[in-house]
Image (cartoon, rainbow over all chains, first blue to last red; front, side, top):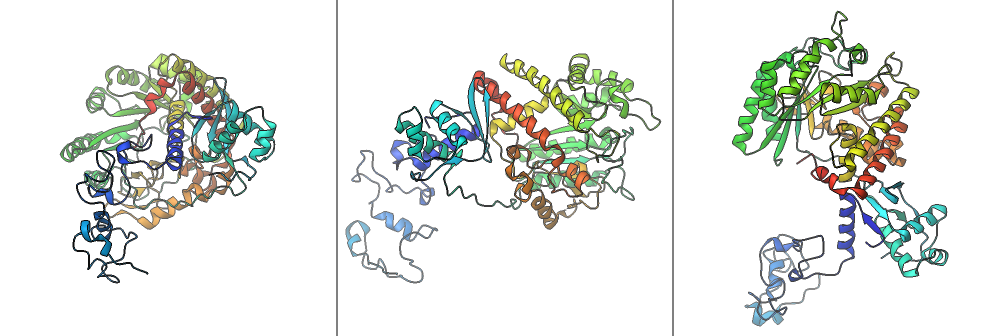
Length: 113
Length: 476
């Protein structure tokens, strides 16, 4: 904020909140938005899953596991209903044709709920 | 993004001057900001009449970009509102708030007969007939166990001893301290203790124990012998001559915690500055806190409006003393100011006036749980029994009535983030309902809050390092 200067702790929290809602998207490597360090993305990141971000060079070639693997982090191992088909009741066969995510990810079915 | 076509108007805040700057105390968030010339001009223009950003840009002598930016920032901080206003979701009292403090009323007996006493006086809420006069070990142990169990997740917990006259049951106090210290050690937690006493029963043994166990002591005393005229023994004899040497001994021997005096102001006792000087300079107390007596308005000792105005002007004089000390980086013992500054520094916005029935409960000699020590032994206000724990329905009822959301009179007041309607017990004595806002001292609270805001502003702008002492919240 340039025209308001925070004086007490609550004002500093308001400033941080505004900065966080206004701020751009941050990669983990950038250290997160100011005032929110250390910064961890909300959600599935409570499970350490290399592959969610970019590698040390900023690309995706050197990840510990393929980026396509991200789908499965939402699909099976995550307790939170994400924007992937539900494999328990309605779409048990969604990934039937995808044996290995790296090679076969194009075979994952489309789903029209 | 702000909808730029909309006209803006001031939202809720208290605007004040300090250290040559214009400051804003935002309500209800409790944030305090300093305005720069652009945001100040924008706000002053909007205080005059609502306007769109374009109108403001045309009217004010600043670049249009800066004006738009200032409007956006003021809007984000909720200092100004557009035509849609803000949607603030209603808040309900928290379910199962962990305990932090337990007040043990070790006895309901007292060796003094102070005429204004809320426990025995004309406005009492206690119904002690047929109940134990002294707490027994089983009740005290159960209470400590309950505090430990119901404060899960808190690193530090607190036990306060109260009465009656607390020291009339000193053997139990000793036993509780030793037991609770042992238990805290076993659980890897931190516990501390404090007590309030009239000082009549202090002796070397008691003082030695209090010092050894770092027990905070608050002495109820209203000033010099004449100021203490209402603090008498049952035969009418003054207590001051008895307690003066004992207080000197306490202050000389107990160095592990700050020792505080707690003054009850009445119609006859309103000389705040003189009393403060007597208690700190003549007797040597580290801190002094003042509070007007809790009473129905028709009592002889009740302070009426002219008296309260005098108290406020005396508070103001002493608060400026505090400010001068703070500018030199020195502590000052007027604890009403430090307590308020600590809350302003954090920017608290209270759902309830205090922790009663929330993070704090009182337990009476009978084991009845009360919202705080002031309601102990009252059948009407009991929130359960220590053997069965808090009655959650009664607790919820108490907290729902005391919630700021239920106090409509408070909703347009700038002091509500700090006051939240004021003491539940005072409200009951005055209005017969713990959830009633204390409307009889609104002007006073607003005057006091305004004074403390200006003092906070001066310190925060000119000597901000002084405020480091308020960085930690009391509750951990």
